[in-house]
Length: 356
Image 1: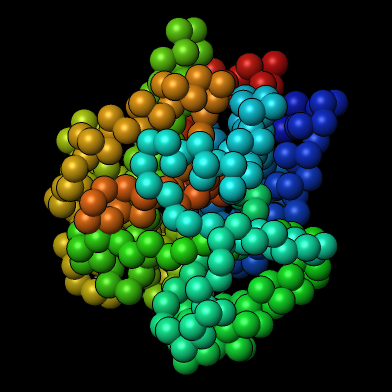
Image 2: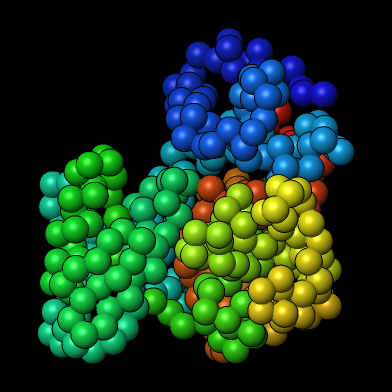
């Protein structure tokens, strides 16, 4: 049922492979057990899969062969070699992609040691003006993908906590010290009518996985999906498919949404959703506005960023077109929920080269 490549993990000697295995191991133990048997959990761990993938990839039906494991996904970033620093740095990545589409303004970078201001904080100048900010982890693939922060009447409200508007950055710095992390605070770009209609009140993001053909280095769009929000049982918005968000598959040529999948939280089983289970909005059969322009922009970016072998990017869909949101290596499941990624010859060739 499970592939035997974990022997190559055991024999790994290069630092990148060992770091990827360490990152996977930490993420694995942070996940709940989901009621899986000890034997099944052990097999998932040795095969490099997080516990949540059992239901998400419908492994009971399809097995694990062909699925890009979480360890391999982390390892795949090494295909970019030293240029992975571009993808891993939220500020640098935003600067590069802004040459091809709009990118949100970055206000500051918060680390345990210091706060680096890039732009003046408008919420300090008028702390009663309502608005929103986005807090990203500095490094992609972190446990917290992003957080929306609401500002109103001189206070901030988010999953990170709440307090006076002028306390937001100091609160983030305290989080950075506790978790050994760093954060980027940027403007919140409002999504357009199409994205808002899919799941009102949720940030519904376009995710694209780009890979480079290994022999002639031609850019390829391996997968395009929409990550559509859904309210969780705890009342919080689900930001990942593992947490209950939906993933809609997009036809690469036409921009048509051909399928939408998510977890049925009651049975914890993979389910098809032609319409949103909470808002009732139609999803399957809709077409992304301006898809051909979006596709041309993606190909232009990846064609000219010839130093990259693979990247996974996320965009806000505004009424004027896509706006860069983040590099999102931690969101590969939004693509793989629809098809095993190792079936893609370009992805498998990079993985095989790294593991040889």
